[in-house]
Length: 138
Image 1 (cartoon, rainbow, N blue to C red):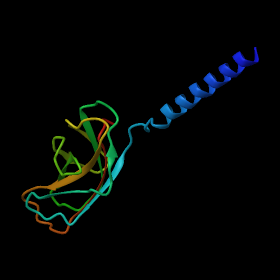
Image 2 (tube, rainbow, N blue to C red):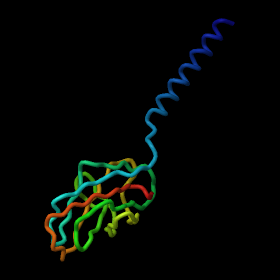
Image 3 (cartoon, helix red, strand yellow):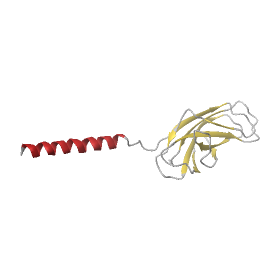
Image 4 (spheres, rainbow, N blue to C red):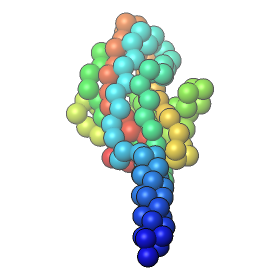
């Protein structure tokens, strides 16, 4: 009887250990990340903020963008990029305190970055843009 009890206890510990290992790798829910892009020259150029990554966890074919602050006189556009600066979403307008979603073809379970582009007629060369973005549809 004692031997059966020990086997049961061993199996219980084994199952608990496997369950703990499995749950340790579960990632947090979709969230906003912040991008800060400075020194974007006028004339339709863009910069990607590679300091602030967002991890995609859903299969949603949309990325979300919300503007915090920008100094471009003519506004700007944002898109989702890989670490290699390959664009993986459509460009959408960036507006302060408004969320816009872009069609995205970014695969799940990878890191992505926010990129900011200017109008090709933008006269302000010393620009700053700060925005929140998610590689999931938020």
